[in-house]
Image: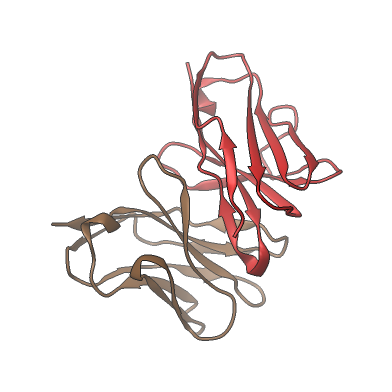
Length: 113
Length: 112
């Protein structure tokens, strides 16, 4: 299965600033996904990152708040923009490998103060 | 829309006893079902999946799950619980757009 390197592992940010999270995969994958896990909650899909086209966002998530880049088949970034304390969550990237094996990054624990 | 339900927020089991974490699903078409585990301050780890084939699926760390089509269930089981099994467990389903949709999670406490 694919191996994902996600950075940073954690950060504490001031409100109103932005944070960019990176995910690097050790193999080429067609589909990459970004999730949010709010404290004590389950994982909610933010968007699907498509190589060469705009990301597809789920209901309740918008590009202005969570811009995503996918420059190639092994890399993607998620930016959390104009942050507020409500954005404090764990953010995870995921890829779909062969045989419907979905792998997740180790997550980015974001605290907004 | 595809969905999974985990009816229990928390399950307590004594060490050495069998454990079951429940999951039911609602899908159109053939279900692709998954179990993941999340340990404190760690990422999400894959346990097992059901795509097709045998209804009893064996996974990591001695866990298994039984796919039951008539009851639309995919319960996670382990014959003998360990304290180290204490964690947050998620049932998930693949939707028609290849996305994974998660249940709300069940916190498993194994009591020494």
